[in-house]
Image (cartoon, rainbow, N blue to C red; front, side):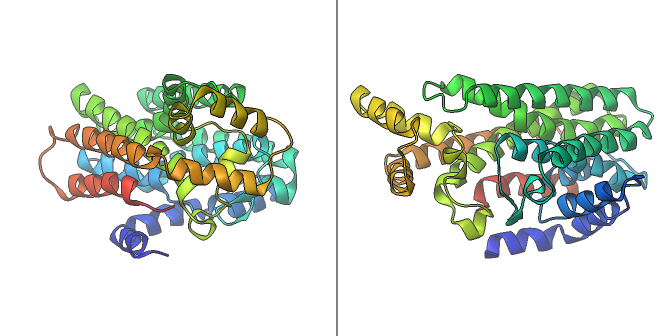
Length: 326
């Protein structure tokens, strides 16, 4: 674990402990297999970013009830649901440095457990008796599915544009993070302006998060990332580092690469060369700058809130997004 990550975890250790305490509760399924899968998938080495953002946003808006950590798990269960389904779609074998759910239990069990996690999230959310909160979760769910299916449709699409890429990551990643932040304000009963500011904070932070996530596929080592470098690339996911790299190539060079990697002829050495090409053409620095711009934009969304411990923690979490290595 690098020093930055260790410091981050220590800073929020009490919140993580409370969140994990709630997640460690039995899933209350009549089928023991679902409980086993839930314990394996949900109590892994996840960042807990979404529930933590919910907790901090709630505290920023003065939420005082004891169920704050229980409600925060809604966002981790929805996230776990999407990961279980994603790994089936991607034929993934690892998740967070250990075998994926579909590899251990098979695709059918992975799909059904993902469904169960999603329903578990809503069963907890219903206890809030807040329709606006439920509507926010539902809307985020629609965005996630739409973003994921667009990504699936554009697999191996070397003509994917930057605009379409941004639309995809907004749906599949940023909208749930945005919902986590907005929900903290919604449940606190604050005015609409505060809700909208936290929603925009989460949206911009979420976009930055996914930009860095896609960057790490080309820059992080397997030990840091929990999966082999270039995993997304090998799965045919065309992300911004490759989009920018291709835009710097001549048409003939681009066509040659596309023909190679869309065929079955590309081997490990070809992937290594393409990863090095991405690393050395300026795309990495460009995306870091863009992610930093989104983080700065997110920070400005909190200007309406007075200085507080919760605000400082949100700003720190926001900065961590572009500094992380996994």
